[in-house]
Length: 222
Image (cartoon, rainbow, N blue to C red; front, side, top):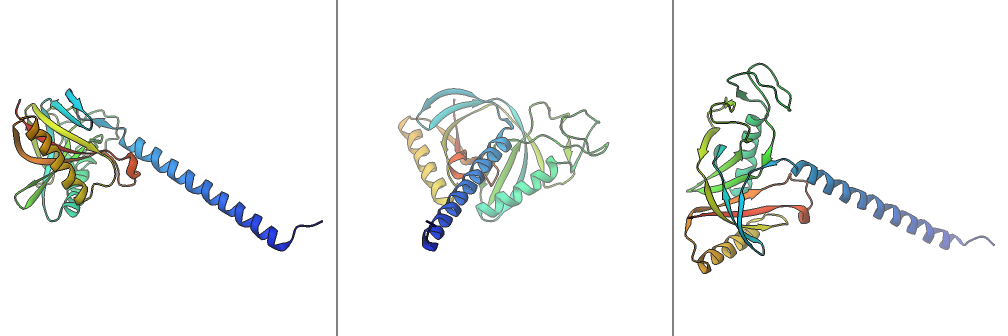
């Protein structure tokens, strides 16, 4: 006895639903793997002093940063700032000498540098400072010099930070919440803050929200 047209239609719909679920699951897995792979880059070194839930006290060694200053709203500022830094990182620089690198050399005077994490953002008056940590293989003397006057190389001494980590999309509401939480911890622990909060982002834009690593960092005295 053959199945009725209504029953066949129901079976077909169930098959399509299963296929759709399978495809969506595959997309989610691939997006997660891509986010993790793209985030698996050299990260700024630090020594963990203590940890309480999502808050850590870290000591960072001296480091070199590439920095640009951008005027505008936070989201637009970090997008524009990152583009300018990426332009420098991926070859718009003048090398002091030709070096053998893992990333390909574009020509005799320009070279690519490996990406590092995090990219940081800090508000200063009405401007945003967007920074990229230079790979530790370089010194201030050997790091390729930027062609653009907008990109500035700066050397920072060792510093201590109070840091709170969170996942999800780093929208203004979430950032404000975590800044307040971190400031409250600093106050309760009688720590001495220095300067403005910095925002640190570790993942490419397509990373799934629950896999994202975002941080608010506030420098504190030792």
